[in-house]
Length: 385
Ligand code: HEC
Ligand code: HEC
Ligand code: HEC
Ligand code: HEC
Ligand code: HEC
Ligand code: HEC
Ligand code: HEC
Ligand code: HEC
Ligand code: HEC
Image (tube, rainbow, N blue to C red; front, side):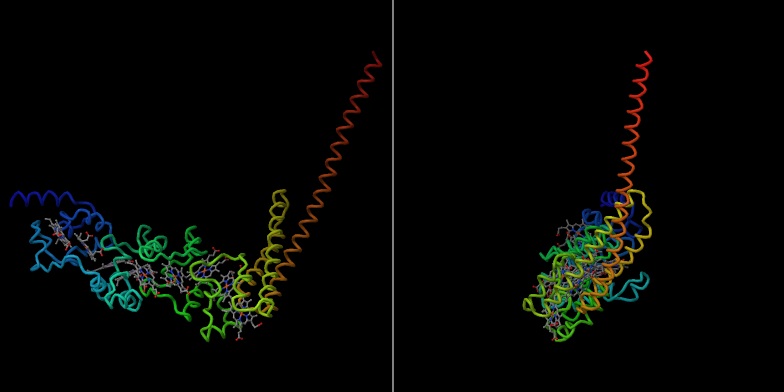
């Protein structure tokens, strides 16, 4: 017994490091060294959320039977159906959470989610707190190694959902665009559910504000109110959203509008208007780049192009209004300014070409002159001899 205590004392003093005073007395860590490694990294470690808070038992003894004794309220591994309540025993308690400024509604929200509802019916395949947060290496979401960090969430969900966002948003996330939505931005972390028909626009609209405002003013709003069209997803899908320039007009409008109908033609008109403006803008930008390389002062052209682009950027969301006159007005302004800039840069290029030709001619002339003069000089030298 004495030898054992000595052994314990040596081991405990060897723990050191991040293990604070509370952990020094924690005999659970000595036998469960794998869990110790994870646990010491977690946010709970420094807060006295020790093994026995979740598992019960006696953490002052190295005697396994005693440590795991039922009299010491050892509960073993909590059953999946008990985990949310276990975490909630602290996380739903405003008194315990107040010092940390943490919200206390995760459990309440969880119970409203499909995960929570099915768990209440005894379906243990669904996600419980520890599937998303892990049991021992729990880290806050801002920590890059956390299973709930925006870059890791899709993997966390993918433990169970084959579904992956393969659209423009996950591409943006992969490029480090932290403004792009993760699974949890659209579904909620704790209220995970497919947004209802009437909620989808609210979700997309939290980021795409202008698109939503224009959509709400369109003839399609009525359809949405009648729940015959889900605001954004019916045209864009939810997980395979493509970037612009993929001719959505050719694909989605004909799902509901006959080819050649007024509505279908409106779509084609909008597409043509936007494509033309886009092309002018691109070409003007390219010419600007070239002129700049020739050390021309292009600042006035640049500011005009910025103006043109701002009209175009208004036209993009405005296409959702289907108000052809308004869209045409914006697209036309963008295109005419861009065309103007393009024209000026073109004639500037013409001037350049002429100057270059003139310069070349001068050089050729000078070169010939030098040759003639040297020939004449040589002839004279010959005459003198
Ligand atoms: C002397 C070493 C020792 C100590 C001290 C010890 N354990 Fe264990 N523990 C074990 C071993 C070995 C197992 C695996 C064998 C088993 O399931 O009984 C185990 C299993 C467990 C399990 C899984 C039980 C299950 O039903 O699968 C939990 C949970 C656990 N220990 C928690 C604790 C906690 C909490 C403490 C501290 C209060 C602690 N242990 C202290 C050695 C120890
Ligand atoms: C915040 C609550 C919490 C704390 C603190 C905690 N555990 Fe656990 N532990 C759990 C839950 C929940 C499970 C169930 C398994 C799962 O969901 O991953 C578990 C599972 C286990 C298991 C069995 C499964 C496995 O992963 O091997 C052991 C052993 C264990 N814990 C030991 C410990 C020890 C030792 C400590 C202290 C270092 C500790 N736990 C701290 C909640 C906790
Ligand atoms: C004994 C009380 C207690 C229990 C039980 C508990 N926690 Fe905690 N938890 C805390 C405290 C206190 C914090 C401190 C937060 C801080 O420092 O920001 C915390 C922090 C967290 C955080 C980080 C929050 C953040 O963003 O800063 C997560 C995530 C978390 N706990 C999840 C869980 C999960 C999942 C369980 C169940 C397996 C659980 N907790 C069980 C007390 C507890
Ligand atoms: C389906 C995955 C999932 C489940 C299940 C889940 N969480 Fe979370 N949780 C997250 C994500 C993702 C975040 C961080 C981002 C966010 O808050 O949107 C988070 C954040 C948290 C935070 C940090 C504070 C906050 O609200 O921002 C706490 C605490 C927390 N969860 C506790 C819990 C508890 C307790 C449970 C079980 C009742 C639980 N979580 C279940 C995914 C989940
Ligand atoms: C441990 C496995 C597991 C994890 C992890 C998990 N889920 Fe689930 N989820 C399920 C199961 C099982 C269902 C129920 C599926 C069914 O009803 O067919 C479900 C249901 C859902 C539903 C409702 C689907 C419907 O048709 O009603 C959504 C939305 C969802 N999960 C999103 C998420 C998100 C987002 C994450 C990550 C933050 C996540 N889940 C993590 C297992 C998981
Ligand atoms: C931009 C918002 C958005 C993002 C990001 C997103 N979803 Fe969805 N998800 C939706 C919408 C909207 C629906 C409603 C179903 C539909 O009409 O396509 C849905 C439906 C679902 C469903 C249930 C219906 C089905 O198709 O089975 C699951 C499960 C799901 N999403 C999981 C995920 C997971 C996992 C991720 C991350 C990899 C994710 N979602 C990312 C918006 C999003
Ligand atoms: C009736 C079909 C339809 C609906 C409904 C719809 N869109 Fe669009 N959306 C389009 C088309 C068509 C484009 C142009 C795509 C292209 O040029 O390839 C587009 C382009 C976009 C763009 C990229 C251009 C820009 O504005 O920057 C975004 C973002 C967008 N939509 C968001 C939304 C949101 C958010 C909703 C819901 C409020 C929504 N859309 C509803 C058809 C639709
Ligand atoms: C959390 C904010 C957020 C939410 C919610 C969101 N998006 Fe996005 N969306 C973005 C960001 C950021 C981009 C990337 C812009 C970029 O890369 O230029 C983007 C890009 C897009 C694009 C492509 C735009 C382009 O110019 O190519 C479309 C279309 C789009 N989102 C539609 C949707 C739809 C539909 C929903 C709802 C189901 C939605 N978004 C929800 C932030 C969000
Ligand atoms: C989910 C089916 C659906 C899709 C997809 C759809 N529409 Fe419609 N749209 C309708 C219905 C139904 C109406 C009639 C609304 C009413 O009751 O007034 C309508 C009305 C219109 C109108 C006004 C009436 C008219 O004939 O001029 C225009 C314009 C229009 N849609 C253009 C488009 C364009 C462009 C697209 C593709 C970007 C598109 N719609 C995609 C169903 C759809």
